[in-house]
Length: 163
Ligand code: THU
Image (cartoon, rainbow, N blue to C red; front, side, top):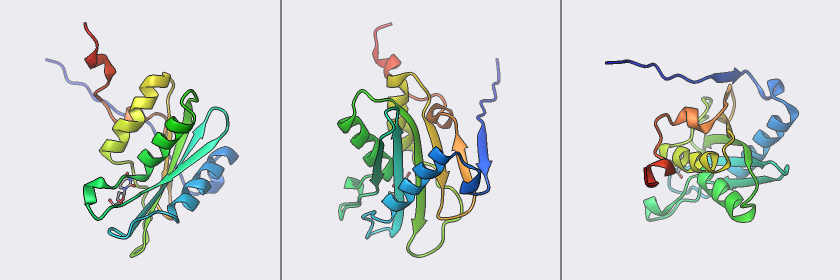
């Protein structure tokens, strides 16, 4: 029998002033994307901004649907758009910003499980880590060095190959 502790490093910034210029700009893009979210059912607005290795930034926001499960989260809108537009460009980082029309979100909102799985696919594909920056509307900013660290023991394509 063996017990393991699986942890991960989280960097916590007090404000955008502590971020690099590049990261602050990426977060700003997530904030402006968030403001255009289509979320009439939840009133919860999420924006995501994906930084590619060629310096381009691709954004996404949550797109809801009257048939609730047909909607999609901001993170997946953004990474799928990045994959569609720039299939050979590696993703360096993704910034996420979330808030509500009904209350102030001052805690960073982590990506949901489905989004973690979707982002992890690209990390697996490109073989380099994808940084995740998270923020609510205001307050602290969390940074994870790799989506894989936010999804330990993930299912990936290695399970689909012949052994
Ligand atoms: N949402 C996201 O866009 N990203 C997440 O990681 C969590 C949730 C959206 C989905 C839905 O439109 C709304 O937030 C409330 O769940």
